[in-house]
Image 1 (cartoon, one colour):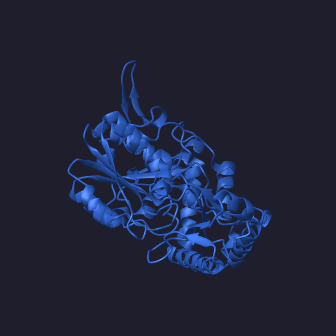
Image 2 (cartoon, one colour):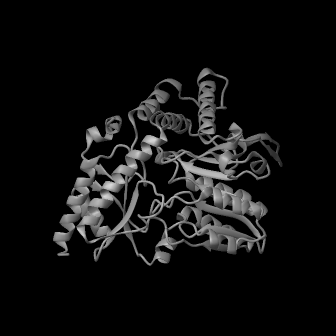
Image 3 (cartoon, rainbow, N blue to C red):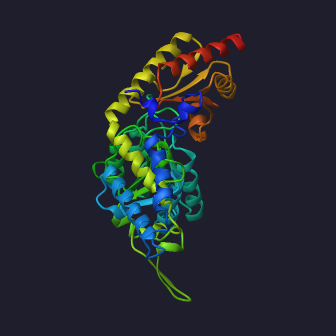
Length: 399
């Protein structure tokens, strides 16, 4: 099936879009659901006894139930809606970190983490006088389990890592990381922003304490994110934002707070975001992760083969490791921004720079690189245009 036809943007512009890792394009069923919500159901949930308010609240809960089933969470109140992955991580860092991390405690992070899964923990570590330890990579670009076993200790309070490295697309050994952490009594936060589009995440099977992702990388619009947390942990954590439906009772001097999930959902909720996330999840489930994986892998392998034949392309962690449809690469002797600029003249969209992963790039001694990432709407023509653009770069820079 030609899934490209399901995405209206390609009817309106000429684009060989190879930047799905930054944000996915949106299928018609999601865009239709957004329009339908505002034309038929728009109301402020929990702010009235009239039909629209109650319908909006019902739609929000239906979306929560969909996410619960999607992640195989035990309870719907373990699903907290946020703006994005970054807000979800900050919620955990501030609420859990400020309450439970103390002087001398340890926070373990992957060196390949996105900045959003580093900077909040740096803040907490400074405030609470805790120590940050980094786990480096093995020869295949994965979270080094031997390094992890050596560095984790009884003082480790939380381990935070990316299920898929956003720069390279390398899949991390999530279940093994969680098992090792739990043996030492540490909690684990899984950043699934870059992995949620590519394979199933079963939070009960993983035994993840927290798992976070953004809707916009899963065919939903920007502005909706998810925090999954085990209820027994979330119940102990203080609120992150104050006001709106997270309130139970307010007096002149004191307030009490609503139970989960409302405790962490201060202010008016992004109902249209939740509704369209539900539609996006149903779209993914209808296609199936096996189909998505096959399309992405086929395209990625074709692109790698074609790039390898050029002779002037350097790629990173593309062999002997399980990956999603992402290729990190450089044109030897040419800055990644120049490469991306010239490719754009061929209507080829790739990401360039440090990809919000400066510690990783420093560790790899690679100042910057390009990233081509594939989705179900890509095809062989996109790869042909990528290669055509790279050949032009060779000509321009006399490689």
